[in-house]
Image (cartoon, rainbow, N blue to C red; front, side, top):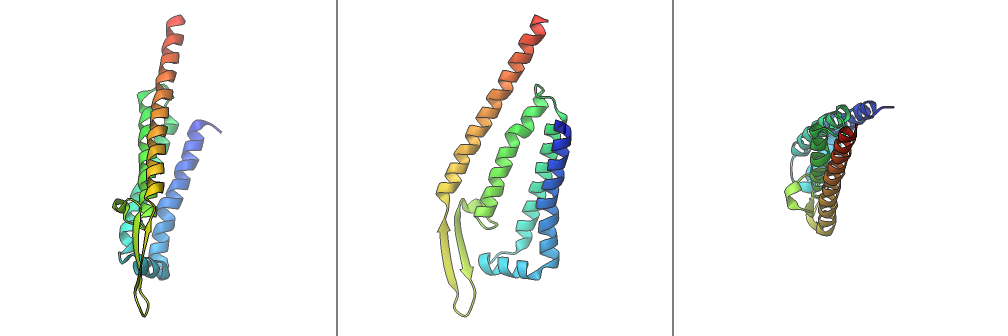
Length: 157
């Protein structure tokens, strides 16, 4: 399987996971909507729309990665942007639909007596951020090494 084929399969999988599944769950499973609203107090529509947009962005980045040569400048774009998109996905999931909470979740369970639960996952968010920055730095250095190797091989031939 070539790099291009793998990226197309990965893009299709991303579309399935981030676009089709959330949209079907939102449209055809009302218990999903009710449970999400009962936990967060927010409409799940915002979460679903975020997932759809992120899925499309990740699929496009995957296709860009698949069609570009390793030494081209086009190949660095998905390598740098996709970790930040995945970080946003993690913030979205850890924040139960609110990525700007940065790991602090305030969930209210609405039964006879409402109960509020506060969960802080800021340490996880910080570890993820450090991993994203290190991964991006590694990818940029790898790209520069590949470019330099190609330049040296062109000069020697």
